[in-house]
Length: 151
Length: 151
DNA sequence: GTCAAATAGTTTGATGTTCAAACAATATTT
DNA sequence: AAATATTGTTTGAACATCAAACTATTTGAC
Image (cartoon, rainbow over all chains, first blue to last red; front, side, top):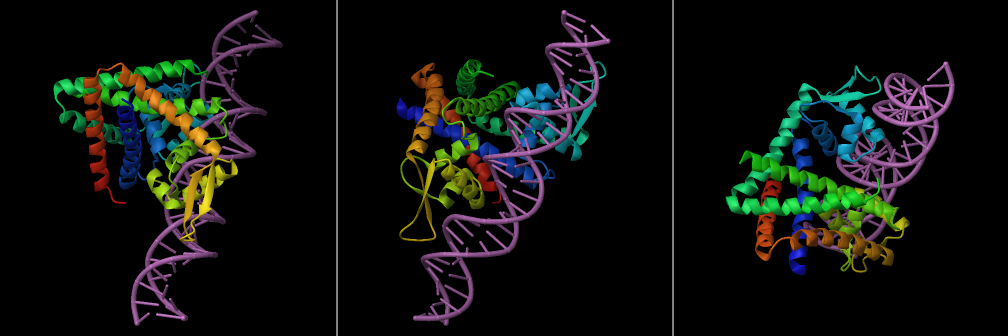
């Protein structure tokens, strides 16, 4: 049992590191060399469709609002994000992707989908069901753990 | 099928973010407030047992040797890591954890093991087997993808 | 055996990431 | 209207990261 735990743990750690490294390298090879992996995840969190406020995106990313402001400054300068002051509440800033931002979003999304597709394709219907279940368990545990932490 | 992909992908991303956030917060609440999550992973890569050279650890972490040197400077200053010049080759630096470094290593390792244990405990023997298989597939895909990237 | 080339690690300058705390602008409450 | 709360920005400090220049040492060629 202990061995199984180490094995699963090892795969998870390795998968995390690989995904980060591959994403980083893929970006550097693309037409989006000026975007870091952190900035990519900020673009991902801003998302394609609805507009989101600075606070919402910061919370989603788990960083302070100040951190996000700095990062968004850079993304605006580089032409990936637009800032729009809310009409109804002038304190609020809505973040939205530019055309170029949306292009990058889709590229990144495709990488993620391909990655998962490859895995699932090699499994049967039933197996992928079980994988999902395992991931769901893990996710549930983490959400419960998060609850217990102070803000 | 497409829906399954999105679902698995969503769990992976979420798990990824949660693990990082929880690790970070747990550190900040512990007696090891002066260690960042990146430094924690450096400590993890240096490891408990054998000594490892600067180059080996840098490769494992996927950073340049220069980056690791800077980081190790901080970890030595804070008392988590020792530098030892190799006797047989005076150019080589062996990195090893201090007593305090090993204490932190074990704490971090326990978090990881508990996380996985929780997940596996809720599954039967057979299911955890399938989860492993899924993770193995994903890992294999990522390793193959990595191969194809230029250094 | 000596000199050139290779290897291991360090230092430095530039840019990015992150937080906490001080701040400014606006909205809400009293 | 004044006090308080909320939203976001700015700033200073510490860490993260790379590339490139550098130092020390070892290995290889002659």
